[in-house]
Image (cartoon, rainbow, N blue to C red; front, side, top):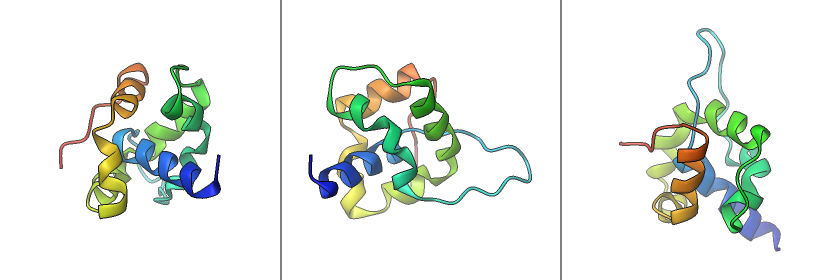
Length: 94
């Protein structure tokens, strides 16, 4: 898979999933942080625990990613919704 495709898939995961960071813990919004979710976003494989953890950590960034025209198209993908549901992260409403 090309690096561009991986970044796009990771970005999609970031858009859809997330986690509320602990109070006082700063979150750096970076779609690449979701690279552990690439397999779950591109195949029928379920997300790993690491993927869910990363998605939860990026939760506060999701609306920012939704506003990005390049990333927005990934938000409504079936796989994004699947990962969101399995990781128990609410689908973002921005």
